Amino acid sequence: MTNHEHHHELLRDLSDQFKEILEGSAQAIYVYLDDTHKVCNQKFADLLGYTSPDEWAKVTEPFPQAFVDEVSQPTLVEAFQETIQQKVGSTIPVTWVRKDAGTVDTTVIMVPVSFEEHLFALHFVTKR
Image 1 (cartoon, one colour):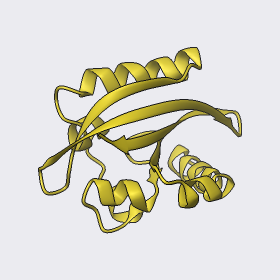
Image 2 (tube, helix red, strand yellow):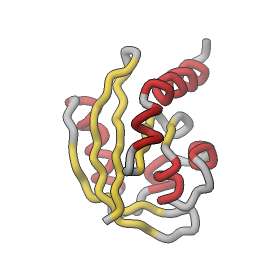
Image 3 (spheres, helix red, strand yellow):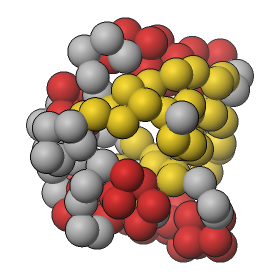
Image 4 (cartoon, one colour):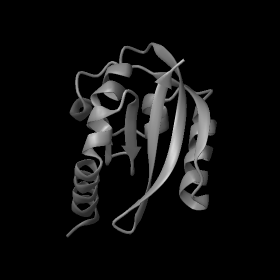
């Protein structure tokens, strides 16, 4: 199995495991593994102007450049690295870039999660 196939299966299984949270949360949520492997709920897709989570997930540009306002990029990347490396949660302000090139200000709560011997960060996003 290639890395790509493994990551695809891993995200599918993670989505199944957290289905109740992804579909039932009042918050927008996404999980990022790499630029090609990511999942979100409909609320996050809507927040960024995408018609579906699948449409959003098909964007393969580098995540920060594709979705995050320049000013917020260092904050999000640093918090993500800390969440994965130190296994700590955080709450940060993030301005997102919508599909229509508009922006939306949010608060992101990042929580580390271990699943099938891989570390992920669940991102809970609330519009400010």
